[in-house]
Length: 378
Image (tube, rainbow, N blue to C red; front, side):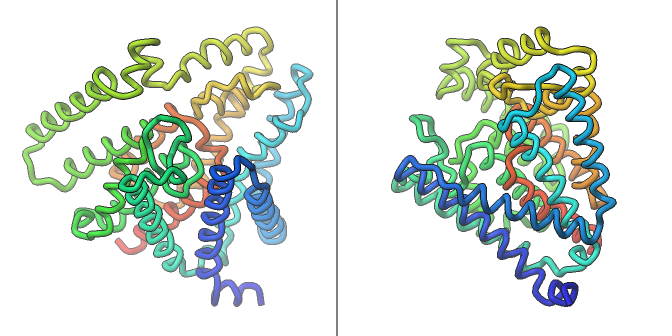
C-alpha cells in the first residue's frame, strides 16, 4: 500500500517537501528581520524530517545504519578520551553532521529511487528563479529584508537564510543548469535571471565558484582557440581578483588592515591560528588526533573541511567524508562534473557550514538525482 502510494504521489510529496522547507526557512528569515525573534518552527520541521527518515530506514533498510553506528562509536571515543563528555551544543552539532547522511540514506531506499522525480526538478528550477527575481527586485528597490548580510556589507540573497547557504545553493544550482542545458544554457532567458542574481548575492565563495563556472563553460563549449582562451581567462581572473582584493570594497579594507590571507579567508585563518590550533595543543592526546574531541564550538576555524577533522580526528574525519561522498555519488562522474564539484569542494574548504547546514542536503539530493537521470539519458 505504501509503495503504491509513493509510486503515485511520491514526486508530488518530494516537491512539496522542498517547497515546505524553503517556506519555513523564509519565514524564519522574515521573522528575524522584522522582530529580531527566532522561531523554533525551522528546528521542529527539520527534526521531524530526520525522525521520519530514520523510521523509514529502520523499517526498510536497517543495515545501512551500521555505518552511522560505527561513526558514532568513533565520535564517543574521541569525546571520552579527554573526559570531555557530551554537552548539549556538542551533541546538537554532531546531529547536524549526521543529518545529511540520514537524508541520503533515506533517498537511497529502492522504492523511493523508483519515483518519477521530474516534478521535483521543475519545482527546484522555478523556486530558484523565484528567489532570483526577489534578489533583483531587492537590488532595484533596496528591499532590506532580502539582504544577505544585516550589516553595511553589500549583498542580496532573497529568502535564503544565510550567506553560506546562498553560496552553496546557487553553486549547486549552476551545476544543475549546466548539466540540464549544457552548451544551450544561455539560450533560455530565465537562466539570465539566475546568472544576474548571482552577481548581487555578495558572497566571496559564490563569486569564486562563478569564476570557475564561467571558465568551465567557455573552455568546454567555446570555439575559441584554447591557448587564446586560456590567456584571456587568466587575464580576466587576475584583473577581477586584483580589483576585489587590492582596489575596492571590504576585502581590500581587510587586506590593508590585516593582510591578504585574512582577506581571502575572511579572518578564518585567525580563528585557526588563535583558537583551533592552541586548543589542540593544550587538550589533545594521541587518541584525539585519531578520533577528535571538542568541548567549545567557539574554537572552530569555520573552514569546513578543517573542522571535520577537528571535530572527528583523522580517522573519524576520513570516515565521515567517505560516508558523505559515497552517499552523494550515485551517478557516474565524468571529468566535467568532477571539475565543478572539485571547485565546490575548494569553496567548502575556504568557507564554513556546508556539512552542518541541514537544508543544503536537500539541494544535494536533487542534484545527485538529476545527475543520475542525466546518466541514464546519455
